[in-house]
Image 1: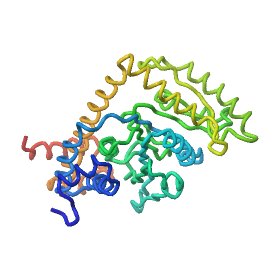
Image 2: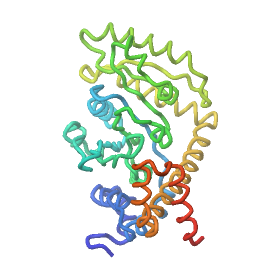
Image 3: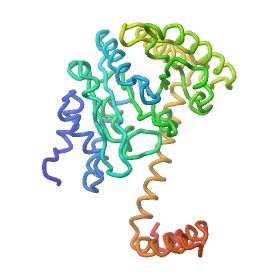
Image 4: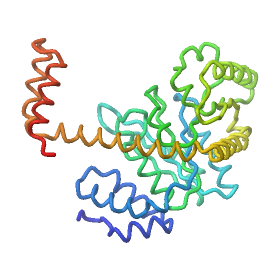
Length: 332
């Protein structure tokens, strides 16, 4: 057992009683890459699983500068003031060079960080696709078991695919700035199709008129997309964290969405599909880890890389060769 690790019983009891310190340690446990920690985390997750699944999961994304942290703080304060226990999973970008991350969301959400009804957990993205941490799904389960009513997942929002976020939340919110005209051309159709709503932020002062024009732009864009299977028509709202306007309307919209999807059965189907996606993602991740940790692959990979760099082999031929070595040595 790794030093400073708690017992299974201590982790489970601490999480279920809402002990913030134990919750943080449990999240650290599930994020660990140590084999012993992975085994312990698996048992802890299995025991808290019956107590999870009851929160509203909201993903929030947007380009840098849109004011995600400011919006989340104001939005979060609205929720806690109305009796909601809130967990914010703030995913910080990880440097591809140093592998370090900024981890600055607690300082950007200082007021919310001191709210006894809120819990903020910054985690490095680890460079994972979609701007989410590798263990975000497990962290959501732990927060739900700890009694949080709403779990917000703030993504990096640096232009990567946000598909993974959509695959782990109930409601996907896209934050945008006013001045939509030219910017609308740069929006990928994919992320528009995934968004359940767009909120135009910083709709105050001289930006008010531009924000209203942006609403019309995005509403027209939504009309060009295929109808959603969930029966929901995506909304476009404006908000001002500075003036505390539009925040209550955003939460009312999320509640309306939840009521609709629970009534028409989409909510249950969506959660089931997400769990199946999680299964396949774990299989792919596990196979990749096994592949690169295989001794024969470790020994052969440098030569294959040299062949490719020197133009002797095509990448496809090298991949086929390496997979052949891997499969030959695998014990099923």
